[in-house]
Length: 121
Image (tube, rainbow, N blue to C red; front, side, top):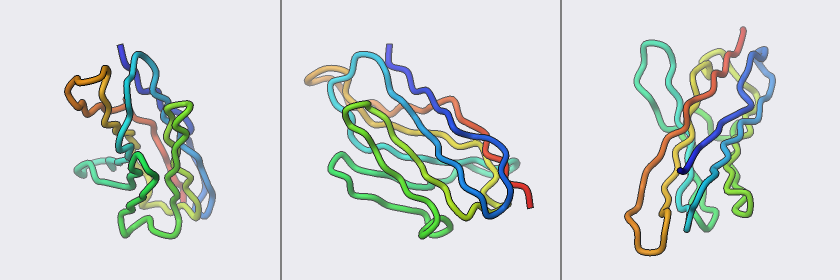
């Protein structure tokens, strides 16, 4: 059983920082792209940032220069450092992982349960 466990959300004032973590546990052969998405109340889920297996990163325009995605391959964990937070960053943040459980198995796309980030203005 593969599990994604997110942590690090909370309440912060505008201009503050938070660091989200998403740890992947279980029997895993290889992890490929790791990403963060978010969903604000009444809105569709949107892409925030991604990092490939070789460390290439991609960001939504709305978070460029403020958020940094990173990964620890030894710990199968992806992080999202969020600085200069704004009220519009308030959302539930979800990690999203592409992985193979075994050699030759199908590529799977898994989602975490989400962690709430609330930025007060």
